[in-house]
Length: 595
Image (cartoon, rainbow, N blue to C red; front, side, top):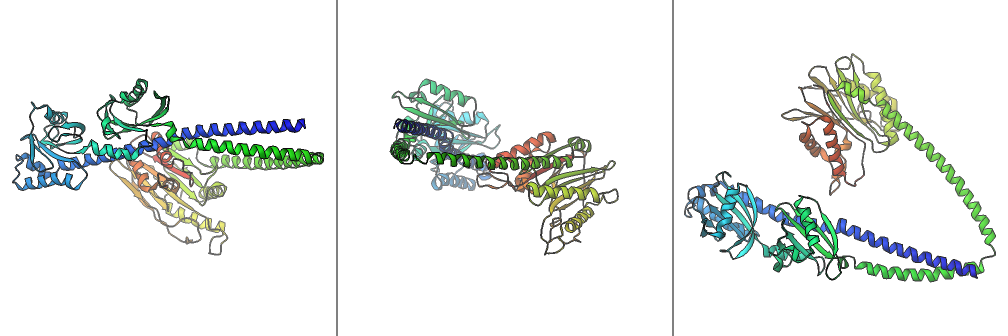
């Protein structure tokens, strides 16, 4: 009985400890997710909303400021009865009438007239009027677009004004723009409130509140609502031009734990601050805590009763149970040992295959001696892969090959070995200048080797491949089987497409004739060859393929940089686009210069 009671006590203690640990780690993970994802997502959404409104207002202001007829109208003295004047007044009035702008305006430096969305002159600007100082500050700033907060006496309200200079920014003809009411944005903020006690502010580098979900807080300073230490951390981070989310937590005067996050509003040079009481965001943990306690209590009663019953009434076969357990453990250990040995042999074989595949690929020294500059991005999906690159030097001329074999992993690696072996056989000094002929020979031999001459073949494997022949002077001869060559010169990017038939497949005719393409190259021309793994890699918000368009943008964005640096850029662009998406296929990108 003492043993039973002791064992029951151990079980009870274990369950209590497990329940406590589970609740502790659950709470910790929920808080981590809240601060690293949920609050960041809310802040990003709100900041994007503000950025979108401000950016749209900027675009609208620029369109208004750059309208040729309005510029002509302002230059001619902004006469309302002229044809240009009718057009200008109609454009000014329709912005606030048809779109969600509270104000639209044009102010001339020629006449100093302030034309408002009513289609009338509501003021004549003078330097002596303090209410007009904003106009002369915008003119003297020489910034094409300015975003300012202004109290306008004529309009009797505070607005976010987007001011765009008209004409030459050194000598502007005037200012055109639109205005958004802070009241309307503040009301819109209320849709994003997270609980009744949350606060949402948009502040500047001094902590002044420009926007809030509570209109009465507009114009105040954030120090009125948070401790000085929190305010100082916020403003220090903001003034460091930190363009990412910043979070912290603190206790308010009531002892409540508050989670706070800031996020930059880039379009206006502000920062968005969102603070939420911890109790509002993790209140569901109390329900989890109660349910955990209930489940623990039920489990305690059930397990204690079951353990007592088993110990009391099934003690006689205990010895037999131990024997069976020992036999089972012995069998499990033996099976585990066998699986470990087989697994180790498999790992050793694959690692050896990796060394073999890397050995048949050209070495760094060989590539460095062949090219003026180069980089190789070779990234198999598994330890070994179906992509390969191959070079052969003759005297001053050479061949450069990039290939993508069927599949990846071990099957793809076997195809690369076969392809490289055949290339070593068929390439000689007589046919080196004819990549199209080399493709035809490679197609024939692979079809014969794999028995893929007819549709009854047991396999249907092959490869996509591109072959470049450099004559040692200034000419490239390229032929490709579903593989393209990208040539980047100083003034343009040329894409030389290969033929649409792959190598070796059942559907590819044995006598299919591939096409040679002659390309003249100059000093510092960069040549790029890639398999489809880079272009087809999924990523982004919709897991779409990276695509040829983005691939071309990467080339155009970095072709003037050293190729060693381009390698880092290609890797960085791919990794950022992939995010958490898994690699779909083997990836190879080869870039090189001959001259």
